[in-house]
Structure formats: C-alpha cells, structure tokens
Length: 95
Ligand SMILES: [Zn+2]
Image 1 (tube, rainbow, N blue to C red):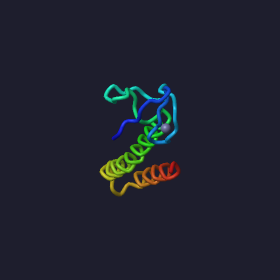
Image 2 (cartoon, rainbow, N blue to C red):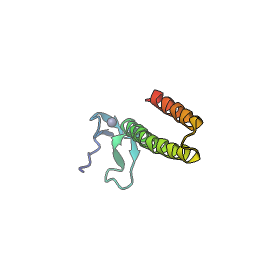
Image 3 (spheres, rainbow, N blue to C red):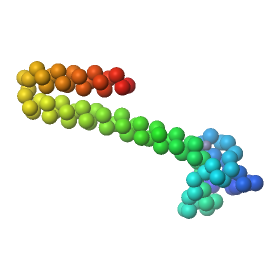
Image 4 (cartoon, rainbow, N blue to C red):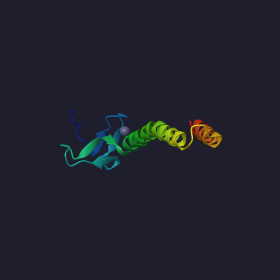
C-alpha cells in the first residue's frame, strides 16, 4: 500500500479521504511517515464494527452450546424447553 505524504502537517485519510492534521492519526512506527493511513475516527469506527461482528458471530455458538446442555439435562423436560424458548426470545429481541 502506498503511503501518503504529510503536507503542511496534514495527511489524507485513506478511508474518508479527508485531509486531517497528523494529530488525528494514530502513530505507527512501522509506517514510513510515522502514522497510520486511517484517521482515528475511521479507525474507531472500524474497531466498533469489528467488535459487533464478533459479538454476532459468538451468539449462535453460545445458543448452540446452551441447547446442547439443556438437552443433556433432560431431553423431555418441559422446563428445559421453556428456558430455551426464553433464551431464543431474548436473543431475537436484541437483533
Ligand atoms: Zn478518516
């Protein structure tokens, strides 16, 4: 990836393409110009999305494990089925 040059203490963000002061970028020692190519704003947005995606990915696994655990306790238990329905409804509402 080509690094952008700092002109008049400002740098173009490779995500939002806005020219922002160097202070709006995180420092990156490995980068030739010393800062990351994404501004802090774009970086935090990316991290937020990344976290949300991971949360969504984790939920079905958690549900599957819970279903299995409840199944193991008693396959014919009405209580287990009620609990399962409750969990599913709570997770469904969060979407
Ligand atoms: Zn940006």
